Image (spheres, rainbow over the protein chains, first blue to last red):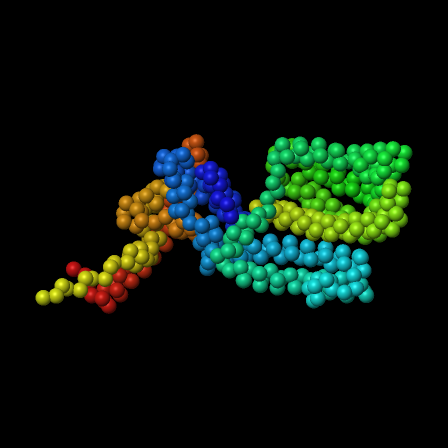
Length: 322
Length: 116
């Protein structure tokens, strides 16, 4: 866990860590009061520029987790951090685990990926599928509980620090992302651009390679691009995260994960023309290799996107209750 | 003649723990007039009850939630500052704490003997 060097940034970092472990309903008032306490001490010690003034003010308050424990009446600072970390990790792990199970079910994996933990969902009946999902949830609750116990009380706050839920983003990032999204949309939707990039051969022999199965997913990809564009427009207008931009970001993340899962169900990603200097067997091997690489990339991407979507939902819940 | 055995070194934590036990009573006693958090930390330090914001603030917050303290934000300054003041309920709480402290002091005197 790195500590910012700028005194103001250190105060902001402290307050963020404190907000992370406070009950949402009291967070705003506590942060205002603690912020006033810090500023009073720093001012009387010569201001934020005075040597060590900010560090002494923060040290006088103690670690954020301990202060939160004293405020909430919990027995130990590690317990506060552990409770919050548990509440964040379980939905993240469950969502990632569920995506893996759905993918394994869709591709018809017969055997468990990790016996007893990661495997396809039962599809005999809706009830069986429901119990399969419930089983995944209970496994994940257990995994997270064991992981946090093994990690130890002292190291949980640093884990929590990395599990922050805020949606990073400035107006500049949003503007750059919009430009990038526009370029991707052009590339995907304009056949001449698309075929110029995804093609093999030269001159008259140059032939597009994307399979019809993949091209059929273009409308879905457009929806994802549009959602991310709306998210960036909202960010441009507000200059920071708001419930609306978080909700659109979550929807875009889940939609993108859905597209990644759809890509994984394709039987062919590229169709290599045999006239491109490759024999038919070589072209098939190359296409098969790309299919496998694409599967792995999309699997990892889907898991990360779902985790991102869940984080946004948790953040919305946090802001809503505040 | 041998040197007398030196007394064991004084552990500052022992005294700090004793003082912490009466911190709530002393803090409430200093809040007859409105004071802000860091001002109270300084006054406590000057009175020999050195404490830090991380210890005092949860106490103030709890008293405020219980209605023993009334709090108001002074927004007339460049930076808003929160002032605490004893309420009527707070005076009752302080009287109860004072009674409790006297009972503890008397009981202690009974056991260890009245100090000169």
